[in-house]
Length: 375
Image 1 (tube, helix red, strand yellow):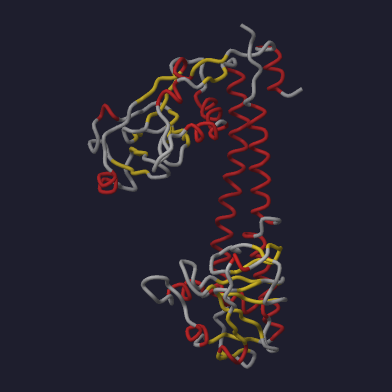
Image 2: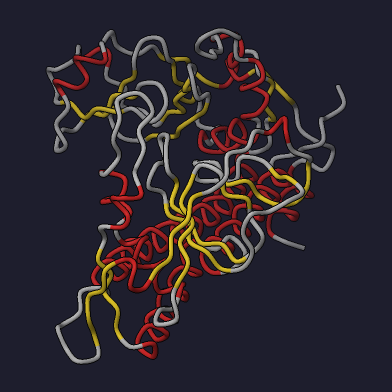
């Protein structure tokens, strides 16, 4: 039996009481401040954080807002507009006055336990959000929300367990972000070769073939499992025929994602894009990683005020660094491993992080579910 099970068996074997959040917490007001003031007053080294909707924050100094609006107690901040959510914060802070926060009323409450409890029910609050331009909840939605009242040792043990899960997830997120930066750096600089007999710069047509996709509309097709590459970063829809089979690089031609580079090794139907294939002297996956390394340059090459697009002339003007086939294969092997590590949701860090999040959500739900005590 785990320590938590022992505590529950000892301290609340018959269940726990449920009470409104306002019965155990004090609701706090924020400060009157505009988005423009937050931007003007923001100083990275300041001591007081002001929270606004979403992930918007500003760090300000004492004196920038009234002293009575500064909250110094550990609190649960309610993000009541737009992206509905909660945040736990322990340092001096305030928030815009359309938001509110909660601190605890007495010592027999572990406030962070109630932060985790509210977080576990975030979908319910999102569903309560008023319809309109900006989803919004009101103070009665949180004041009246029923929360369990287990003994303090039970609350603290659950917080200890969930804090450990949170720390593990944060470590994985930090490692994934570091690996992504490493991958971006390495995939960018790996194509800067010295001028040696094993390496040369080639004009596009010397190592690549280019063709353009075929115009198609969804109403003129039949549903299937062939992805339609229309210009975005994901397939637009799926149909029952293809216009290319085998390995290919696709560069989106128009729209917000014009210049986006993708690699395919399956039947596809390309419509608003360019299809690039490799000639015999080049490894197509090597070409893909090269074009991906100049993604920003391709994006910056967009033309047109209405619907931006890139032209085949822009692509044809690109010169490609081409080492020996053996060196190309070596580079592809390195970048494939990096790519799988930071981008593949079926393996590497993304898969591990996704599994950790599922595990965390599962245990959080189990840990925060209590039998209600009979009245």
